[in-house]
Length: 161
Image (cartoon, rainbow, N blue to C red; front, side, top):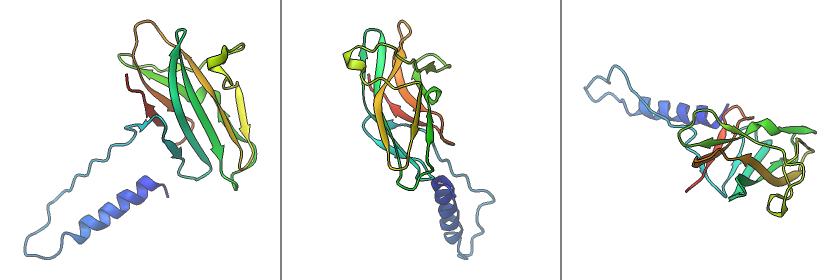
């Protein structure tokens, strides 16, 4: 059961407990709005609901027409061996554009882009990998969020500009 489902279940129990017999009939419907994916601040870590992977975007930097996200992926000690972190899962959302900007693999990264995030990362239990995820910035755009889409619920880190 995911954390979201657990929270919604707890909220449903709390709502049903509040509808005690006070002489008034409970409302016919109850609407609860839960907003997911508002985004984490840069520097925050996210642990996926399975507990197998923790992701962190430590910082972002714009240099030479690229946005570089200093990202880290770590697996739990009891995670399945060889857990792949798919390169195409990293995306950049920009203001005014519906489609995300895909990550690019840098063949010969300059110093600020080292170590570059490789084309593939496979982590053993208890291992971490930290590198720079690079995105070519389209002209005249404002970056909004670095997004990791490989999880059942994508996670985003907000970029303040």
